[in-house]
Length: 313
Image (tube, rainbow, N blue to C red; front, side, top):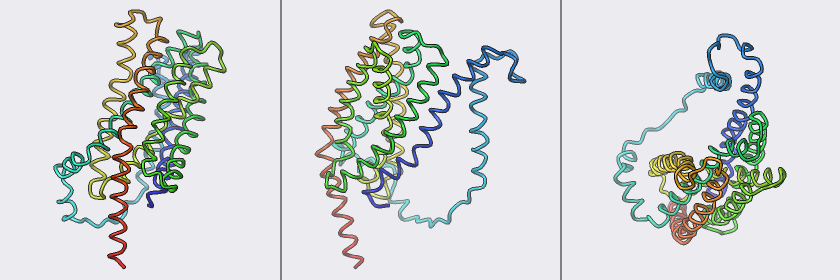
């Protein structure tokens, strides 16, 4: 796959997660609303809470589609033991250490971005219900639609935009894009927490959902900058750090800010505002520090590829 098409291709592949998440939000809220009105409508679920039934109902399609994986044939592979021996974890860590300017900025920047987005995603339903008085059904349906529209636009758009900039010679496009996106995310997050009209609130939420769909660009940046034999391990290490920090700390930080720092669960809107005001600038700063190291590393990788092509001729 050419490096200038990688982010766009990964973004299309990643839209499955966007569709699934949006369906779970809208469908789960609808199921809870229906079950609350008719507790005995779903057989064999007596004694379960509506939210428990919603999880079961929404999980069934995934089980059915997951079973189709049995029909997928394993492709033929050439096992290269020498390449495997040269791509150990120790070598990968040494490679990361030698190029730590880029990898620290990348890992930290996208982890901070995930802290922002995961924290918002975890608490936005409670925010809409507590602060704006929305019903559970309205909250779930609106979040589902916003997540689907913003997620698809953001995932596919960010991937193709990064590819476009890369083809134009912007060697740090994958990080530069999110220096600006992080700043816009901070503004949109603050606007959402302070919104007094429904349209402003939904517009800000749509911007947040759009910028939150960044994983394809993050993955492509690692594939472009890492040597082939280290790409799998580098990506695995990134995903471990990104998930632990983002999904582990994001929701917890907002809970700590609301319960301990502010001491009032009714000030969830203020906890979210502080979250965006603090972490968005840190995120943009982390990406900015990685711009020059990424340009150097990409230029180095492009030089290696040109050398290989000339040797093959």
